[in-house]
Length: 301
Image 1 (cartoon, rainbow, N blue to C red):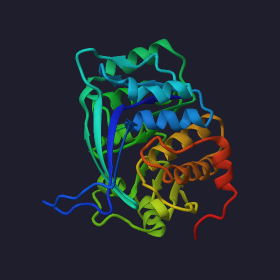
Image 2: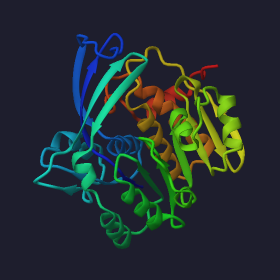
Image 3: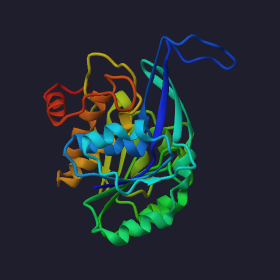
Image 4: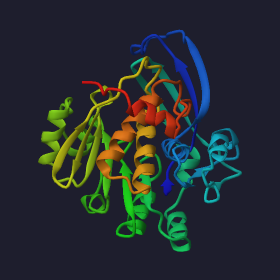
């Protein structure tokens, strides 16, 4: 599979609660890891057995952000390296049940459509292609146009931005949370329950879509039919950073392996449950055995 996406260096602070406007709080902890949605998704998929190539753009300081990807076997030969730029960065404020993230794109903004087109021309189409909005809009468009109709294309429209309906039609599976769904469809307020999301999707005109709802599970909309996949219980939520990336990486890995979408979504939910038990986007011990162990648990009601 191919991931066309971002690579960041994450600096995270754990807090008892998120600060109010103008307020200063003391952190209870600090961590520094690799991040970026594209890299996180590629790492999750590779840890779960997929053959993954990452197309991304990084600066001269990217080794820390790429080390665990290389160790997990992610193909980094297509990564564009810029000696005169710095890698994207993110600052995370993390509380047990929520987080806020500020991203500075930096080298991610140097990824170009021609990088996508060159890779698409030089290599056979992979089983699955994943892309998202932490890279420039022209790169996402180039990815959709290069691979639509040749393979299964997954789009994670995060952070939310406007999407051309013509481009949306090139997406095979849209994966987003309820807030991003509300932004995409101009809804206020965002649908907050599985039933509300299902009702929105049935009237949306969207194609196959998965909407993640955190502890509310996932609503899968496939060929006009909605299914609710409950979340899995975990003993303790450490932080929710990276849960969506673990979900998408696991989903793509399963789809690339020929797993039916409903089962793939269930396995992806198990991966997301594992992700919330460790700090940061890449800290969880995500393995096929760990996912299988979660799948043997009773889902949340």
